[in-house]
Length: 390
Image 1 (tube, helix red, strand yellow):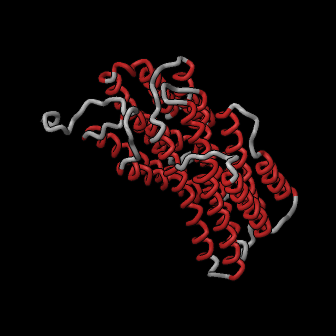
Image 2 (spheres, one colour):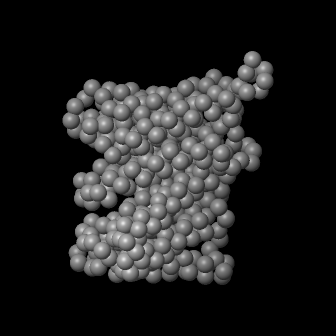
Image 3 (tube, one colour):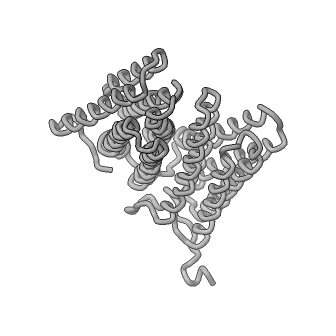
């Protein structure tokens, strides 16, 4: 009956028509923002190397969960009732991730793993349906079925494994799952990506993570009771957030999108893989910057450690390095603005080696990022930098 009314339709490849992110995808992303916010809050409470590494690992797990769903939707989102129910069920599992991720390596490890398993089972059901109905994509879909299924098994088995070995299985599951796009590229399987939809999905995720940075500034100023020093630090940090937005959406992200379009959409390619995987360190760096910002704003009323400054300066350095490496690998050319990444790295090293006030570090980084934006705009005006609007 549902099929007769057009509510239940078999999936088809959606890569040959103009598309943008759906309202359901936007709703779905909000649940992941909750997870990012919880991870940021956990790191703010204990800024140490151990917590930073654990947070980065959990962020990678969560990001790939989002990425797996996004890659499927990019190719097969046909928006029938069954697809919507799968997406909403996945969203419920992500809410569970948000509730468990602060203690994912402690007392809430079982709920965290179960939510990860549910997300992968839902994705398996979706790919199984695509395998049945989309004959021309079966070879590529089979790769995703195998990697997602193997990942789900490893996540499930980890429930019975105690101690550090459990986390080894988590890492192995992630490697197996994340290898699928590379395997599809290596086999030259013709399962094209939608090169209009994919950059928009990434840009929406980036804007949500940047929103957390702006929220961090507001929280910092409020928690500091509007102290003059904190307000000044908040203004400097807002400049950093604004410059990062400008850099990504008018320069770095738009440049990567142009290179993606030049790579073509006939099938998966190295440029596609570089673009996809490059988004992980980029969004991770933005999340770290947000945590650092709130600490910098609070320095006006309370002492903050070197770790907070390192998150801010190191996050900016990682962002600029990621942009440079991504564009070089996609363009297969050594020409890139490496000096910006080098300058940010010098600031990060000096920040760790010297007891520099957090506001001074933020000020230098703000000037550096504004210079990046101004240089990009100047190059674009002279025709030396060809971009495509996101």
